[in-house]
Length: 212
Image 1 (cartoon, rainbow, N blue to C red):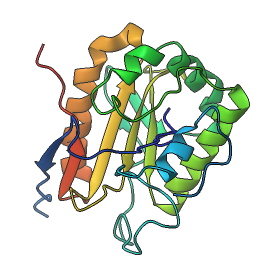
Image 2 (image 1 turned 90 degrees about the vertical axis):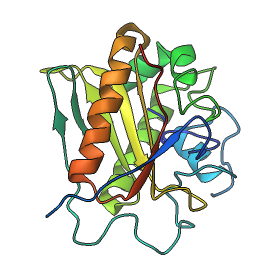
Image 3 (image 1 turned 120 degrees about the vertical axis):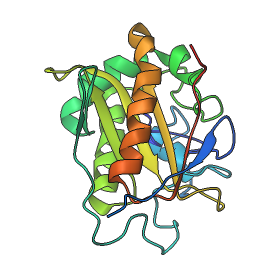
Image 4 (image 1 turned 135 degrees about the vertical axis):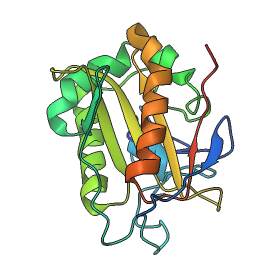
């Protein structure tokens, strides 16, 4: 899962193939360490125009209010979202390595630089997942794995990170495996509703999907 959300040389390019939608509130980089392959986290921290950057260099402004309790899951008949963690390593690695070209062509990922076309080792992927889990714990970014309902089988991933350069307050990206490509639109629709109903963002940037 993109560790930049998984490695993204430009963790989030706002405005680039993405749409910015106002979210109504409910009424109530470090230098690269390894040249190849680039991890999701590595790309996030080295993005010159990226928008989701979870690093100490991020603004002192907190990504979410201190009293905000981030949702821990989104469950629907088609998929189940839970925080991405190291327990998902093998299934996550299998999911994205089976769908590299498909993910790179997914709206929001075209210029992200992840996933790396050459792939990466299971150990490197685990390091990405550890960093994502740390971002979640530190509330600097929120990455969710997309599971097939009732299983631990990874079929996609969702990344919610700070937007950059004032284009919005959150940059959102998601992908699904090539063999379940039909879930891409429903996932975006469900997450868009979730962002409005359960998250504190006023404006989130989330790439549109083609109308079927």
